[in-house]
Length: 501
Image (tube, rainbow, N blue to C red):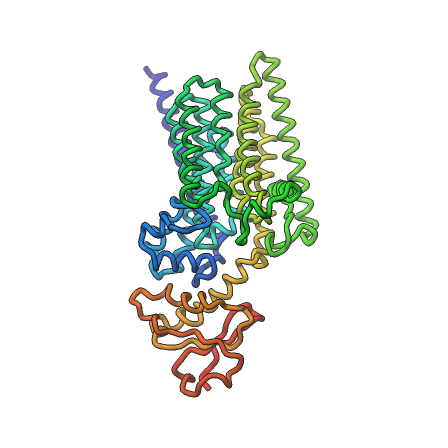
């Protein structure tokens, strides 16, 4: 009895230590999410974000979620964004904290899964740290539509986790959960429809004889296509920048985009400045060196993984499950890269999910290598932690150039417009006209008519006018001291208020 009591006491202490370690890791990841993104803010909406808000304001819930005319069909996302906008109201500043909380929750989910497949909380922590730090997160954390990308990625991660666990424990409920999330993600972002072959891959490789799972997978896929065809009249996804994939797709362009995405994943910025922030040829040589060191570590991990399979085979164990799992994670990466290579350009935000899957693959390989060994492979663990830190250091460097990405420049301008109007006068702006000297930013009529309505919860902005003039001489004398007079400030990429004449 004493021996049994001692064992139970040791077990409870170990479990308690694990819980404490997990709590500390979660708190640190949450703090890091807000710390690394502390400079990100939204105080004014523009372009796609502003258009989304206008739809929310002008349409009923059913019209918003199920529009009669649309180039894309994303009802799951539209419902989530409607709820978000309803909660936010005119508190635009809440968008970024909500984005960061979603990012942190996603990282925590990754932390627990990586802990399972690697059997190492240290690797799980530094991997999740790298996920949060990733430069691919720029859109998720900095835009109202960032919810679109972060929801899609979260659903894809759930699909990956549930299918992987199903392959290993055979619990059918996991497969059905993954299928439900596949349906949801397909109507969140159509890019993720390409994940359907992975469901059949899982069923075939584990030799699942349940016909119902094959049928449900096929029916779900056909149903998704049928619903899309009914609502938007086509099966092909719309391209980026107002283009159509059917009109712009070329095999050469597809291959070039896929190669660029692979380079991005390993740390090489393979795009122009307005998309990548800083092109590879402009990257500091120290960071370039770190990228190549990271590639070396990835090669070592892969070699160790192959060696482990050979070792296990000599011990009489089959290498089949390891190959199956390796292909499983690789298939996710290939599928996601393929889906985002069919349009006219590569935007880094499309690579965030692929980057997470790459980290899952690395963690899995470590877990497999250490399986069946009595001692923790400390050197290999150190290499993987070093790899995650290299990813993080590279991305912290790349983040410093986020301001060069096209959407940040516009966001900065409209943050400035908000700061110099709503930020100073609050509801007092609704009693005034807004004069802006200069229009080099080419503010659209839609933006001029809609921008200030986002702050208005009582309908006071209906008679507000935004008036562009070329010089102070065009401003009426009675406007000075009564209305708000701004001037474009290109040197600081914003606006400044002109003093009373």
